[in-house]
Length: 155
View 1 (cartoon, rainbow, N blue to C red):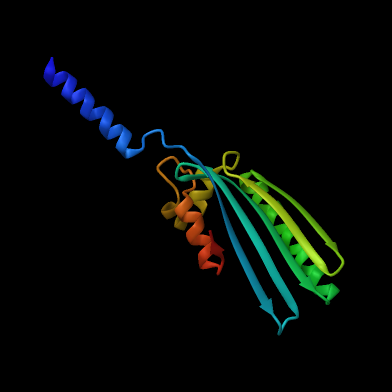
View 2: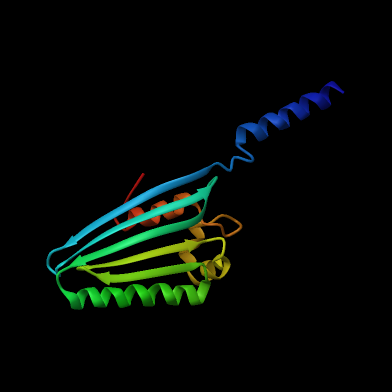
């Protein structure tokens, strides 16, 4: 009986120490600013990452292109609409709203990874295998690495 109590106590301690059930919610913010003076525009982006434990539930992005060149702004408006629409058709989980006024194109996007077909996304993008867990849930460290590779600063 003493051995059984010791073993049970040890198991409970291991579970407690390993963080089983440690599904603490988090919000991380990544920002990116790029000034392309040659092409006459500035890009400002903010990526808010929401999740629990080590996995990401959703990302809310705000991407702003600022320029005096209306053709460039129109081009970015079309780019944002097409890019997010096509990925939503393939995998789901995306909502996107784009505005183009006062010298700015603003793309506001929510990516809900719980609604997205992550299994298919990982199959189609083999590099993503390094950024998901065994259940194809996007890992926080994976999305942070992705944004930092783009030049963003994450807090």
